[in-house]
Amino acid sequence: DDGGHWSKVSMVAHGRGGKSKVSFVHWLAHGSEFKFVSGGEDHIEFWTVSGGICRSKKGLFGGEKKPTTITGATNHFMGPSDHQEGVKTPGFRLITSCATGYLYRWDGRNFRQDYPFTENFPVSALASICESSANASTETKLGTSRLVAGNTNGTVKVFDKSMKLVAVYHLENLSPSLFDTSVGDWRRHIRSIDTNGERILIGTKGSEVYEIRAPSQSPSDGVSTDEKILNLHHRPLVQGHYKHELWGLAFPPQLSDKSVEDPFKDLFATTGDDGTLRIWNRRTNDVVAQANLTMPNVGRQMSRAIAWTRKEGANKSVLAVGLGGDAGRRSKGNGGIKIFTLDEHYELVCTDEGEAHRLTGWVSDLKFFDSPVDDEMFRLALASHDNSVLIYSVDPEQFKIVSPQDKKNVIITKHNAAVTHIDFNEYGNYLQSTDAEQNLLYHDLSGDKFENVMKKISPRDCADFEWSSWTSPLGWPVQGIWSDGADAVNINACHRSPSKRFLATGDSAGRLSLFNNPCPKKAESVEGSGHSSHVMNVRFASDTDEVLVTCGGKDRCVMRWSLMSH
Image (spheres, rainbow, N blue to C red):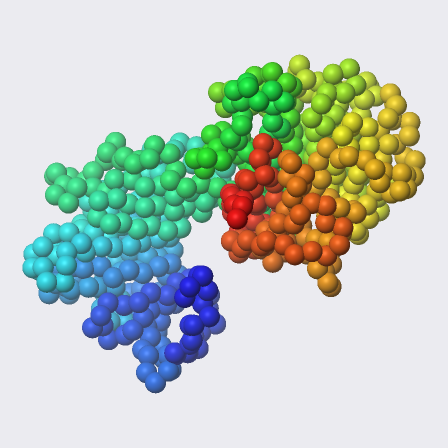
């Protein structure tokens, strides 16, 4: 109904299936004996609907076939041919895909014939089309019937009305990086496929969608080869992070001289549990640069924090990426840090592999102080889940973290819980930090050897400080963002706008909320919804209050928002 809600939908029928895992449900063609079919682990069931009750009958594999895992189904318009068993009249037949690498044809609920697809890889997606209208001739229908299917290894095959193979494609020919051994099989694993006869749409487990040209309706003799594959967009139509959760988000700082052309103005960066760093263009929504996050002898690393800085007038910007994360039983608890540069041509180069900067806890937040300090060194703060805060110095010429022997780095161990958010003050000589137990602490970074860093500082002493950024959900300016009864997990992210006029928050209900800044007591907010899961990060663009980006945790979506004034 209006607004995209399902409030007017009511259940009209229900029924109970078996105990096996169900992978799909598919409506059958009009006039079929059964209404719909479901299938999954070692089973397929055919359903009738009567009087609000759904009743099922198991599919019969026959004596020659053992029940196998069925992964999907489609209604394919078929006609008689010499090699089709039992197809005597044109009409729709049910075709299912199997984990064994075969396609099965059914008559009613009886298995009739199999068609080999590939060995060793399950067929994971299929679709079909009959382009002609209902009053077209049978011959026209038969001439335009197509079935497309894809497997977990990136192979796509196209069949005609008689299940004769028309074309074979491999995603490797579209993007060789899909077969990068460090990536694994996630990105080439086809999860969804569709066709309109002229184009084929392919969705992968790696959160990428490709649109390729379908084979001709009147193909030349033989099967089309991979050389004929054509990506209609010369890149993925859609792409994104693809594993576990998405947290890391950063914009580059803006230049103080607005008259200078800024090559990084329209960019922002994300890092995720899939172990990738991605640079996005916020106007075109394209990924313009990407890097895999790996550590020697460890492999690909999760990432949930990123920071971005640069020197005024430099043609390179610097990104610090925090490593590690927690995905339950797949947790990678140890953390680390890597340094990258991005030039004006959008080339990403890793300048510090982080081998000397491994941590016992994963990195939850990173902040650069955007003005160089300490002999023109960049100051970088890191929040870790081992309850510590680390202050690093980054060489702006070599783009490396300076050696611990230089005594320009320090570890702060005041917290008794995982540190979650950090912010520098306007001069970079104080830092505030919050932890998982809702403590807000302050740290004095003055002195050549950080001699005051472990001193206890009263919040009253910092009451008049101006802060270079504000991402803490705790503190006097943000007291009003908390609703009655809210706890520590409700608000996951907070950010102050460049003009300091607004505060944006992301919460566990999937909402983006906008408040006036400061917000010292409970106040009204403007809310936006779009994420299906908790919002783990929110950032304003560095140059305007009118653009925000949010990262959804488990939905792994990157959403760009526009702030419209009334």
